[in-house]
Amino acid sequence: MFYDALTVDLTAGKGGDGCLSFRREKYIPKGGPDGGNGGDGGSIIIECNENEGDLRRYHFDSIWKAETGNTGAGRNKTGRCGKDLVLPFPPGSIFRSVETGEVVAELTQHGQRVVLLNGGKGGKGNLTFKSSTNQAPRKTTPGTLGEAGRFAVELKVIAEVGLVGFPNAGKSSLLGCLTSAHPKTGAYPFTTKDPSVGFMSDESGYRRLRIADIPGLIEGASENRGLGHRFLKHVERCKMLVILIDIAAVDGRDPNKDHAQLLKELKLYSKELVGKPQLVVLNKVDLLDSRAPVTRFNRRLDEPALEISCCTGQGLKELSARLFLELDRLSALNG
Image (cartoon, rainbow, N blue to C red):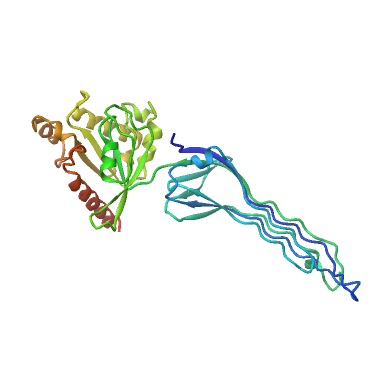
């Protein structure tokens, strides 16, 4: 099960109370006030961690509280501050306040940290209130409560490249061939029911990019048929899309109609989505008896589609190099 939406209840720590104390030592029976301040409560900090795959950590445990600050002590000792609670979330996590509906935070880069809720302030001890007119104050203040909130968290998978195609087009197989990911594969539709992300390295091994395998779309996905919206939202942040087509039409589908329908579903869901750079890739070319289907398909394109076979490995090196090339080109265009 892939957890990409849930609600969490978070509470920052309360500040410690100020201390009421007077100095009492031998030969100093009436020392002045020496009550210390309370420590601040711990804050709630959310951290972007690419090692987190989804939100499952919070599915079964949705209530989290930071540590309370300690009460102040005599001899002007300040209470220990409560520890901040750092909660790791995967890249692409969006936080909305349940109360207002506003987006309060987005995590996009590994290591990014956001203080979501501040801890309460420690109370003041009676030493703070000593003055020339009040040499023995008995006044203290309690620590303030930490901020609290209920947040709806939604995950939109972040990857440079999104694989889009109808069921059984070979997306999971392609992800397994290009990356270190090991998604479930099979010769039947809807093998993949949850998004998967894998990392692909170039020949030097120093550069890598993320590829997301989005579960197979169906006609009407833009109208939320099946799990359309849940799947489509995961490609919104991809920099480019690989439109994967089963050119061999093993299950009797028409490759040309599949391509047109995929573009239609993307456009109906989001005009921005269909406007992303696209690379059309024809899979299962090893099963063709002739090149007629490829020729027929390419007539509808401005430039010929890339031809690959996940089974034999044909065209995979070329596809890998092309993806890095296209992303470099996009980076140059975006400055």
